[in-house]
Picture 1: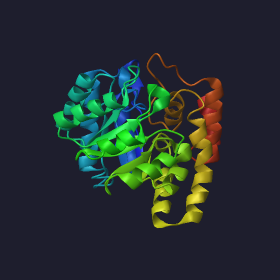
Picture 2 (picture 1 turned 135 degrees about the vertical axis):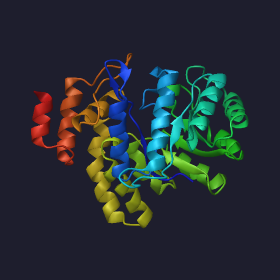
Picture 3 (picture 1 turned 90 degrees about the vertical axis):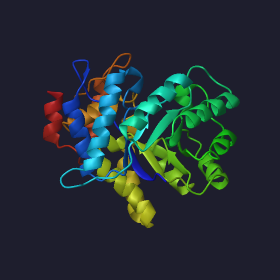
Picture 4 (picture 1 turned 45 degrees about the horizontal axis):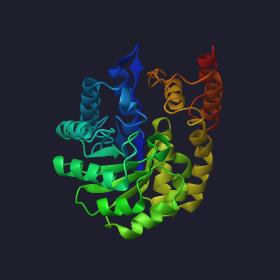
Length: 308
């Protein structure tokens, strides 16, 4: 079962190309700061813009980093959940098979976007992937990007399949978590897909969060989840209050532009994104700088240098 703070990794670019050197830094930063899992090639990783060679390289690097760990084994063994979904069932099967061959632990498969399939169509889509590739599957429900929402009934029907093991639910309706958890197998994970409501989702029975904020605050996001699991409500509430401005700032414009800028402030990678996205605006940068200083991730000197 997947649980805790699982980072939806950014994909670093430099002059239009995948920046493998910076991705090594991104991976090391996550493993060194106690993240509970990583998701390469997801929406935050700008998966729709990646070439197949880049997809393969990112997964190979992710699996190798987790398999070996950092500094004598730190981070070794955390799950790698690869984003493999598209709005083509055949392409999703192909990408999921590539991910399996790379040695990942599961595939994150988004509800088909733009096509607007029916619930029966979504059921058939996920069944086809499940039957074609022997790899655990995490359903990804994000209606704000896909234009359709997978229903609780459809999720529960899919959860009857042995390799449909979790859902990332990126909706504001946390009551879905309670309903899903009450109707599915005991080891089926519900992972929140929105940092700002992760606390509420946990209270409704969620097992963790696939997080954007943990790209820049992996230790704090993991501590937040750990506090909940330990029943330390005072610490949990303190961390929720501390992190909330970051959760808000990183979505002031289309993700991942703000979080890429935040990562650049931590010297992890450049803030370069691929069209049709544009880098964060000056307004967004000012807000991100202010929040990073507020929670102690960068100093005023670093902020001033970035703005120079």
